[in-house]
Structure formats: C-alpha cells, structure tokens
Image 1 (cartoon, rainbow, N blue to C red):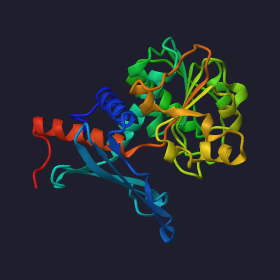
Image 2: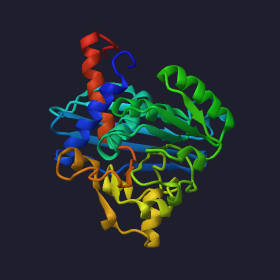
Image 3: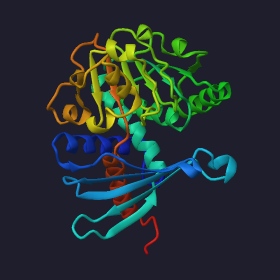
Image 4: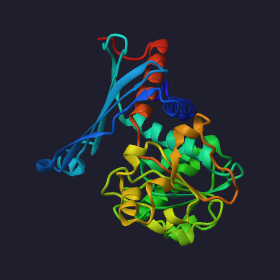
Length: 316
C-alpha cells in the first residue's frame, strides 16, 4: 500500500470526501461498538457510501490494549472491505492500519488548510506516537512551517521523535518539557494523545491560534479543557452526530459551558463553500476530528484504483 499511497494523495482524497459530505452525497451512520469486556477489547464497525465517488464499504477496527504484552499482537487492528455499489460484490480486502494513519493526518491537514492562518510558521504537537508523525507530515503539505516544538509524557518518545522526524522532514524540532512550554507562541497546536484528562487550557492559547484536536475519539478520552473551548471563536467538527458524543465536546455540553449551537458547523460545509472558514487573523479556531468512515472508504477506493494500474495485490 505504501507503494501507491502517500500523504499528498491522501489529503486530496480526504478533502474530496469532506466535500461530498458537505453536499449531502454520503451515507454514514455513527460508529457501531461491540464491547468485549471479558477481554478488555472493543470491536468498531465503520460503514459508508460516497455516491459521488461511487465508493462503498466498511472498516472494521478492533482495539485490545493488552495485546502487545499478552499476545504479541498489535493493540489496534483495522481491516477494510471495499464493495461495488452497483452489485455489492467485494472488490478488495485490505489492511486498514496504514490508511487510518494517513487519512487521520490528512483530516487534520484539511482542518488546518481551511481554519489556520495562511502565514502560520510555528507549530506545537502534543502526543508523539504514530499520529504525532502523521499529523506533522500532513501539516507540512498545507503550511510552510519553520519551527516545531513537541511534547509527550514519555521522555524517550520526545527524543526519538525529534531525532526521527528531523531527519525525515529537514526541520529543526525542539523538545519541550511540558504542554504549556510546547504551545507557547504556536500558530497551530495539534493534540493527538490517548489522554483521559484535559490538558490544553484556554489561558495558554493566543489570538489567531488554530487547534487541531485529533486524539479524543471516545467518550472516555479528553484533551481540551472547557476553558479552551469557551475561548475559541469558531469550533468546527468533522461529523456533528459523532463529535458531540466524544469527551472533548460531550463534557462541556453536559456542563452547560457550551451549547450545540456554539459549534460553528462541519468541515465539509466549509470545503463545499456553504460556510466560511477562518475570517479573521485573530480568531481562535478549533477543528475537532473523530475519524470518519468516508475518509477510510474514499482512500481505500483510491488505493484499489492505483493498485490495479500498477498490478499490485493478489486476485482471489
């Protein structure tokens, strides 16, 4: 898959999928969860149909946090089945982990493209796992970033990230010792952690900043403090029905600190031209991403097309 899919291509595809959603040409129910409490695991089904792209299918994700230590398996396993909308025939079965990594970085990049200042040069990244890398690669495709400051709760992760990503991107990456230190003076703040406690507070966010909130994708996870949401002038989500149920928004909505009406809209509406993105250089903007099946299926469809052209894959 890496032979046919890169970040630039993925951003193009994901942006198209958001645009299709903005025009109301997609069918995508919220995620369906099965909880394997006996094994501390979860099974997630993510189906979607993009009429304009003539693409349909489902991503199945399983998450078992104890797998690496107990069974020497990945903690998260993703598989995508791509179907032909005309007759329902399965066109392809492919790994979903690589696509998930790239499409999540691409979704963040789309939010940055439409909601951050075009002259943004300084970025902060909190959380330096797989998504910390993917988000940086996506960011560099849409903005001319000159300085990156990073933080992770694991000290070794900071060192490894700075070393690896400096070589990969050619940027000088500065390691911070706290969240507050990392975000000081940043034009763009990216959070991509599995945190269950909010850590980004409003008092450290400066005027004109864009926040790309990627990590909290369930009701039990949270990265943004209520004060950060209250301070923002524009809160944009990927999918309203899904976003209001994850920790970053669910808790402040429940507390009454913000109302659903305070959420400006979905990114697809902005990309489709139905609503404006950033309108003022001093605006504080937030893009809350939860991860959408349309991103997976649109990207998988492109992979399938490219793989056929290059003769990659096995025919069954």
